[in-house]
Amino acid sequence: MPIVHADAAGIDISSTIHAVAVPADRDEICVREFGAFTEDLISIAEWLKKCHITTVAMESTGVYWKPLYTVLLEYGFSVALVNARHVKNVTGRKNDMDDAQWIQKLHSCGLLKSSFLPDDMAESLRVLVRHRKRLIEDSSKYVLRIQKALELMNVKIHSVINDITGKTGTAIIEAIIAGERNPENFMQYVDARIKADHDTIRKSLTGNWREEQVFMVSENYELYKYVQQRIVSCEQKIEEYLQKHVAQNNEGVIEKIHEEVVSSVKKKKTKNQPAFNVKAYLKRIYGVDVTAIFGISDNTAMEILSETGTDLSKWESENHFVSWLNLCPNNKITGGKLISSMVMKKKAGNATQAFRAAANSIQRSDNWLGDYFRRMKAKGGNKYAIIATARKIAIIYYKMVRFKEEFKPVDADEYRKKYKAARIAYLEKQLTKLKGAA
Image (cartoon, rainbow, N blue to C red; front, side, top):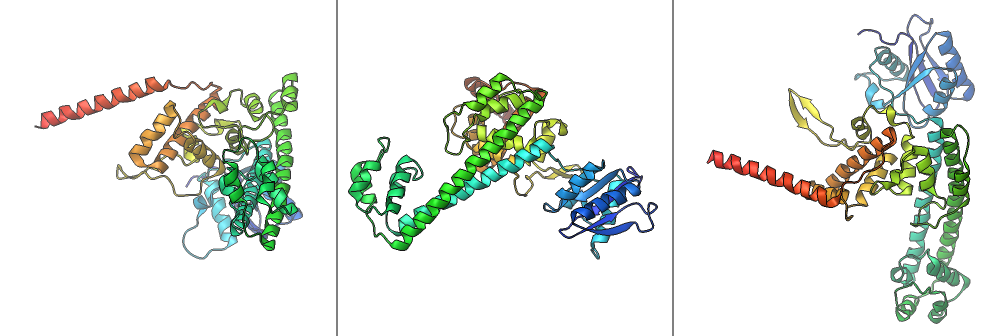
């Protein structure tokens, strides 16, 4: 095959050893093994410079590639991070040296395509947003453990009120930890917004108070409070990076309106929504209001920003974007026939999960996307509808962010009329065919 990249190298990554291969005419030993310490990474970069290498391909193995990737970028190399499936070697004896040579050969022939990698700002934001998401998941685990301990004591307060981490729930839990056992004395902590009557609440707070289970309630409640403090700390750091993002788009200057947004803390609309005004930041970063899309909340938009960044031109079109998200059929054609169009079976990334969550949230909405979801659900089931609607939302998002187009929702009544007219036309066509056949 013709050589596309003459100055190409291939690297096989592992936790302790990196195998590096260069063209055979660049050094007496064209394949070498290096360690994984920082000085070894610098040695790799210096050896590649000595061999006049300009572009490097490496496998995306866990997180082991990230330190080497950073060093190679600092030395001015063009680095392609490739999917391990795309560099799978032929069957036979396998070792790191052979894998490195195989990657180098494929890359020199131009057969490898680099995976999407966010810029430094998006990468930093991604780490923080993912950490916040994990903290929220950990927080919910401690709440479930509290509920289990209450259930084992037959204290049913968690089934009477909607949220035991709310104002009433936390007050009752703290009273239990403090030693209160009389159901009547808990009534002072019940908020006026609780719908359950006092008699039901008294019954739910009568149980067999076991010392070890009260201890478990106390331990998990303290852990829950600690994780909540860490979430607040993480949100403050996320807000700092959003400020930097805004300043980056505004030539390093934050206008007065931004300072007002930062100082004002809006009330939380949902339980897990950040305390700061995410929507205002996102609008200034994107240039358009992506939260106007049905199903895209502030939280969802922030997650998508951290996963994809703001430069969507890295995907040539919306079709490439939804393909990267795995929200479209994986068509397999052979002999001119379509033999399969199933969506690829692989773990959904964080961006894909965000779009799917947005699609799932609008299935009962009274808008055209909600109608589309229900129509797709009738056609192929709930999972089919989620993927189809998530694809449509992702396309709208792509066009808004890349081309700075505001969201223009279709009128629900007009959408229904258009679909009904198309359905009637289709059925009339089928009827004409049947009459002709008769």
